Length: 314
Image: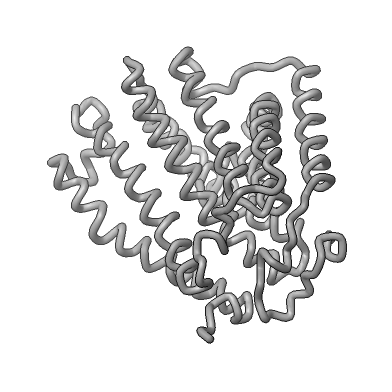
């Protein structure tokens, strides 16, 4: 009988997964970026010249290709050496019950005012005075990133809208859920031996990797919601749907009102409160209807004590 990676200790699996990620990132930096730049007749310095006609298309191509290479290749490789049914093992299966798809839709649409409010709070948070120079650097980097994003989100037709939905909603929803929930969260839960600890740690890493200081807290909270969807359904599909809806709603809103590209929509306190309550209620609802057998989901020889769901809910 073949000994798959899933039968190794979780920390060994994590080290290998991190190694896969670092290798693919180095390959992308060394080979993929130069190839794309060459295809568009650009160099790295040109990428800040947004008035150059080929810069924005090149940035869109870089966004799509790098996301696929860095966030999809490592989890697919990990899954292939982990189980005889790699995609099924990391969560590419039907959610049970199927109602989780409806919950994903409800929670992500309802979360929009809460996320906007958290984003506004995040804008006014500051690091300690001793880290003022670091904060200044982070804010400058984010300002530069927002300028680039604003140019990417210039959409003059339905065709432009569809292209941006693929680039900023479809691709990230699939590849990031494979990476963060399908592999990283499962490993951190095994290592920490506490589901919610693993979910929160994954959400923090998920937000930090995006490198946006001013959007850290709302993205981390969204990561927790996405983690709860995966943990309770045993499937990546609800998280992929929710992730897509979150990104797609933002792209569509900017298409309708370009002014929203660099500002959060304004919601009343009552709407924000209702949004928070719906999100918390949805997380509670998930735990109540979950039928996932985590012994089947993990199916390892590790000493991680997963049995029936009601035996391990900490």
